[in-house]
Every structure is written in structure tokens, then in C-alpha cells.
Image (cartoon, rainbow, N blue to C red; front, side, top):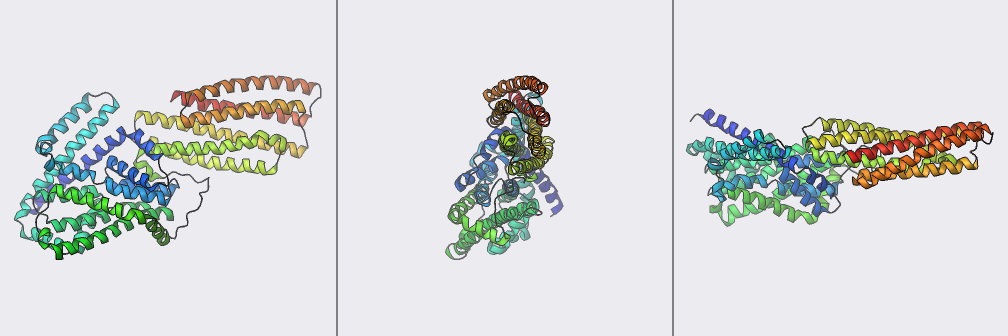
Length: 544
């Protein structure tokens, strides 16, 4: 038997299967981008919601490894704690079973046999891709073409291994894997670790099963090994990450190892003591999907009540002590770029967080010219340094995101975000300038006149409201609040003209201290510029 003639078509079929799975997943992700963004917002300490989230996202992106890598990124960025991560990891194990059911549908839905549907799916997808002008049409085409290629790949693999039924050595290999649980689990783990996809690994097993080569017991142990092997991607991803991110990857490994140990014991007892004959017969593709799904759901149900112990064990092994994050720490991670729609929502969240810090600075700046408290001056200066670091980091990340293959709408959103980031950062600069004016007044022991204080206070109050409306308009994507900003900004402009004119008259009449007068005019400029940048933010919302 020429094994090269088997290996080459099998490798080609595997490549087509993986490629089809990837482009189908990419099409699904692009089509569901907004849904994934909203799913991110339900991340709470409720682990059950995390399980559902993990299952849905994994079903969409067709890879539990990719979901877990993304979770490692979230934890590393501080967006998600380990308790939340545990829920998503459990859900990812459930969501990864979808691909197996797609493959086995050729058995339980005969009309979906590769010979019938795969070529039709590919040609229909290609026609839509060539003729469709809308982006949504191309995304649908990607899903259909990927679906067809996935089936052609699995069919090619099954056909390639058909001659192996005549190979006594190959048949005996699977018999040995069925009799020796450790070897079966090791084989599943190694194959999955090498190709870094449990979905593809299950697909290989199903192609072998379609050729009638896999005993039932061997399949059980291999499937459990595959769940351990899929942890390798996340573990590799966590190298170089912070301790808590490494613990997230470790939780995935612990969860799958514990589940494998528990069900291996049951399988060994059943196949070797209770019903040895059950493990000898060959397994079908549908039965593999059933076992894979049962194993992952049962493990999740069984370990869900004790998942906090797994979290504690992972933290203990990883020497992790989760503490409140330094707010200057950028809560973004390159691993999230694997799912651009979620990465984009994370950038929006970080931009809002930066905007909230500036909101606090404006509140301090509103009174610092009158109170001149050194603590407030120092706090504004510290906040400005924090905002500078955040702005630089978020901007770099947004540029990386914009260089990916994302939709036209997402490209527009990244462009708007870059402008909003710049405007928020400039507002922070002007707050720091105002705090410096307070220091100048202290140094020169200068005082504003009562009229100047009252006039400036009114203008600053309008400006603070202007920024608050702008930030809320950005957070809520509210056109109504954005229009309020424009109304307020016009009022601030008028204030600036009137106050400058009346102040020049007071200076001419020697009613104001000269040093205080210069600071007053500079303050007018800063306050008016803050309202200008708030208006810029509002206009980005209106243009979005």
C-alpha cells in the first residue's frame, strides 16, 4: 500500500476543511459583528451569562481555542476577571461542538451529503461573491463558500483514508488506542495540539469514522484527549502575559483535565468491566458529534458548581492576587484583535473610560481658579498624565485595528474614534493649563475681581455641561445630546466675546489686578477651547 497516495489527498482535504471553516467563521463574524459587540456588554460576574456568551461566540467563530485566546487577552487587559473568564471558558467548550454537528449532518440529513450539496454551495457562493455589490452579500457568500469547502474537505479526507481499512497495522493501531485509555487520550491531545484546532481534530476523527476505521472506545478516549490538546493554543498565547492571564489559560487546562479524568474513569469501567463489546464496534460521525457534545455539556454541568474552586486553584498555582487595576493601565490586548468586532467595542469602552477621567478633571478645574487647592492642582496634573498614556496606547491599538480586514462601517468608526481620542486628550491639556493658572495666581498672590469671578464661573459651568453632553452623546450615540452640545458651544463662544470685551474695559479703568487680568484672559481661551473640542466630539457622533 502506497501511504503517500493516501497522505497527500488527506492533507489536501484537511487544508480545505480548515480553510473552509475559517472563511465561513469570518463571514459569520462579520455578519454578526454588532451582535458580538453587544454580547461583550453582558460580561458580568454572572458565570451563567459567561457560559452562554462563550458558547455563542465560539459557535460563531468556530474555534474554542480562539475564544480562549481572546479570554486570555481580556484578562491580561483587565477587562475581565478570572471568575468571568471561567464562565466563558466553560461555554467555549460547549460552542465548539457545532462544527462536529455540521460535519455529521451528512448522516442525519442525507440531503446534505457532500457529493450533492458541497459543489452547489461553492458555485452559489462564488456567483453571489462575483455579482453581489453590497458587503452583506459578500459576507453571505463567504459563509456559503466556506460551508461548501468544509464539506468537500471532509469528503476528500474520508475518501483518502478508505484504503486504510485494508491495512491491518492501521486497524490494530485504533484497536490499541481503544484498549489503552492513556494512549487514546494522548493521541487526541497531540494531534489537536499540533494543528491547534479541536474542531479540525474532531473533523479528522469523523473522516476516519466515515471510512469505518474507528472503534467506539478509541473515539471516546481520543475525543477527551482533544479537549486537553485544544488548551495548548491558549497556553502558548499566555506566554509573556501577566500572571492572571496565565491563570486564565491554566483554568482552561484544569477544567478540561478534570473533566477528562472523571469521564475516563467512567469509560474505563464501562468498556472494560460492564460492557466490553460496546467498545469494539465502529463509531459513526453522528455518534462522535453526540459523544463530543455530551462530554462537553456534562463536564460543564458537573463542574459549574465548583468552578470557583478551579479559579482559586489556578490563582494559587499562578501566584495571582487580583487587585484593583491602576487606571492608567490600558485595558486592551492584541489577542482581542483576533475578533475585530469585539476589539472595536473594547476600544470604545476604553475611550469612554478615558473620557470619564477627563470629566473628573473638568469638575476639579471648574473651581480650582477660585479655591487654588494644591491637592486639586496635583490631581489634575496626575489625571492629565494618565490621559496622555491612555490616549497614546488606545490610539496605537486603534491604528492596528484599522489595518485589519474589517467592514467599511468599522473603518469609519475607527476614524471617528481617533478624532474623539484626540479631542478628549486636548481637553485634558486645557484642564491642566487651568490648574497652572491657579498656581500662577498663588505665586503672584493675585485675585480676580468679584465681577470677573461670577462671569467666569457662568462660562465654565456652560462649558462643563457642554463636555458632559458630548461624552454622554458619544457613550449613547445620541444625536439629541450631540445637538445640545452645539447649542451650548455657541453660548460659550458668545460668553467669551462678551467677557473679553468687558474685561478689557475693567483693565482700562484699573478695576482689576494686571497679573490676575492676564490669567483671566488666558483662562477664557482655555475654557472656550474646551467647548470647541466638545463640539468636535458631538460632530463625530452626528457624522457616525
